[in-house]
Image 1: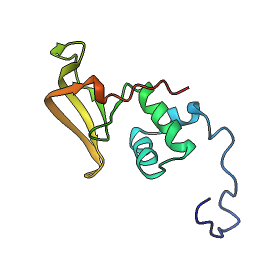
Image 2 (image 1 turned 120 degrees about the vertical axis):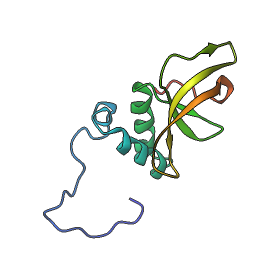
Image 3 (image 1 turned 90 degrees about the vertical axis):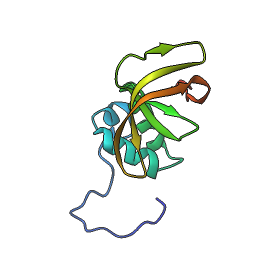
Length: 115
């Protein structure tokens, strides 16, 4: 823990069992996963949140540092990019937004397989 503080005894003192598995994270809401990803940087929780988001077909854009999801099939697909309408998570305004005519260049796709 970064800044431990005493909690009342009726609050959980240890994490729930299996809360450090991707199966647990897949049951969390998408907004909760985004919160974990952006606010628990460098932790196992961030890693598991990213893995759960990828399983929901979200893709991380390394230039914009945002998560994108296809809203529909792209209008154009090449070896270097795809273009179409996407939903993205705007972490500054904390909400999902739609972007039409967006070009997602594959060089900015975080495509590491999260094992």
